[in-house]
Length: 307
Length: 253
Image (cartoon, rainbow over all chains, first blue to last red; front, side, top):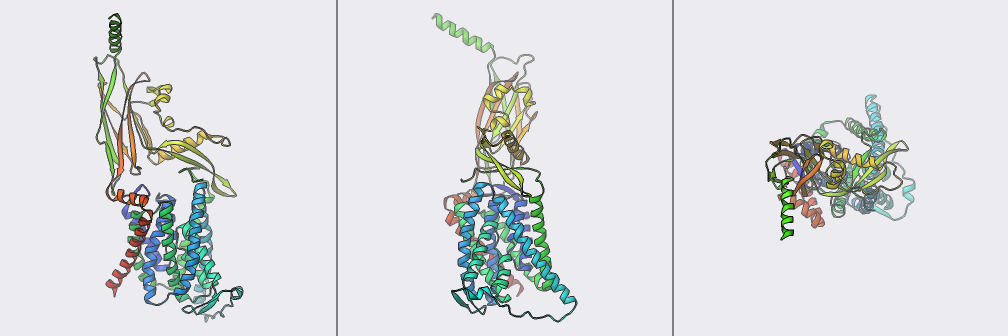
């Protein structure tokens, strides 16, 4: 069944969108990621204009993250205080990101920026995760007793001013690092149409030293607000949020996420991580390939830019 | 009196030089873009109106052009910079129709003289208006060609020679497919009669293409009340997220 998207002004198959939403939803439920990093490039491939894809994807992430956050709130694994600090940084970052997005759209380079961001971040995160999970699997095979790493001394972070107590995370640290992490993730959310969970989660564990059990819930909490803010900014400045597209994606997405969560429980953590890493690297490789190889069509069309 | 007689003679002479006119009809004068819009087909039929019988050996060609609303378009070209392909040069085309379908009774180069094409802007390159490229661009023509090539690949520009059926040099009809990726606006349908490469009659009419129902409501809301629209999108997202989580909890616990 073909459906005409009112904002994107293209006609696509409704079942294709539901299927894409469902598939990405399953993955996001399995791995605890928003899935934006997969969905946005997939939307490019099926011919949705990049500006619409990025804005609409932000809207869809609100839905999938909210669904996940509810589960974490019930388990009390959300550090609301940390979430709010991250959020303040995130909102500033999102505003900055939309401004950068519009500036580069005028210069005709937004496509490049989005793709470069994807290649760099997916490459780094996917690579690190792959190496880390490979080690974990090897360790499990050799059945060595797992060495408990000594609690990391957060050297340079502990000397920063404006300390604050985060009870749920059991931390007493400066608010500057969480604010900075928030800004970076906010910028990425606006430019890449992603929630930024794949940056946020490692940053919370390795930079802020938060306990793993509260990381995902807290990240979801802040992602909801940042992506909601991004959606509003894109809707009011670019008119590029396509409600019809969002609804189709999120119907598939929320159902998929619930299914994925149930699959995820049955798999081993290291296997799960290595699968996710392989997926991230595959998307990264495809995007890098497109940037490096001479495109079949050297020319592209755009609206006259706002400069 | 004398002058009146002369005028009368002139008119009579004009008539004997066979005035030809064209009458056309469309299967539909508006196209509604509904939620399940999947392209549309328009049938154009018409007749050559004569005040004298068909002359033996008379050969009239028909050219039909359907064009969508024209907008400026920026054409960008990629070049390799530091190993990756980035947009470098850009040319702004002043006005290019969003859709251009040309159907004729024969090869355009044979049935239409260049000078007539220029006068009536019939062929695709003539229908695109490009005043001039920035002086630092050496091959501006390549950019216009690229615009035409890309839109042809998207099914937006098309030339179908021999797609107009002509009967007895009088009745003609053609079927024109409109793709699913139509934009809203007023489309022009122009019909030209040509003889020996010269346009002898033309007629034009409009086709209204617009979103209707839900499509229209969403589009209008997004542009007229962007804040309300944004908030509404979020409400839908939150409701869907909550709904799915609640439903699954109910089903599996």
